[in-house]
Image 1: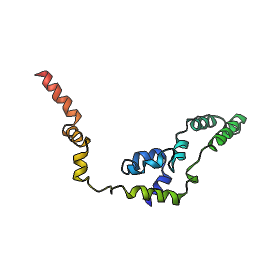
Image 2 (image 1 turned 30 degrees about the vertical axis):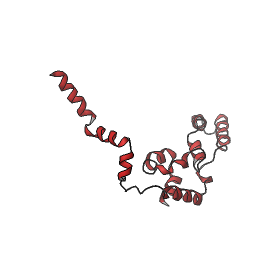
Image 3 (image 1 turned 60 degrees about the vertical axis):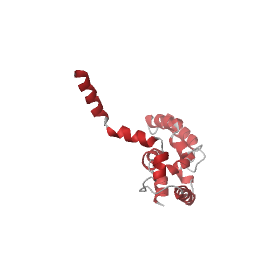
Image 4 (image 1 turned 90 degrees about the vertical axis):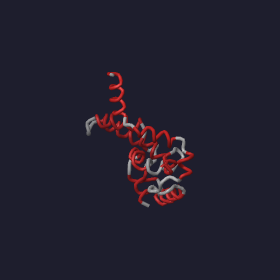
Length: 143
């Protein structure tokens, strides 16, 4: 499926910013026990970032640079990258998670609106833009 392909290709930060807001049903894939949990761990690893920065700061032919690059390689072996995730299994899991999710273009049902406690809060927040509210407060103070 296109969603499974996007999950396999995009960095996790982009998955969180682009896909998850529209398909929150896929968020279990990013949990530590999810299919992409190890990929999340790799991309968020501060030790990898630190080792990459130290290795990049060293001259290419130098002994220190080689030592740091080897340390980075050894550390990265502790992680699993997207290449270790079976794409057929990812596709199957995406389809399963999306089965129960309503289509992106579907409107919420009347029951969803009536039982959603945030529905009325979002409507009142949308009535007046913040920049207008501050202008009205200033006018009230001047009078």
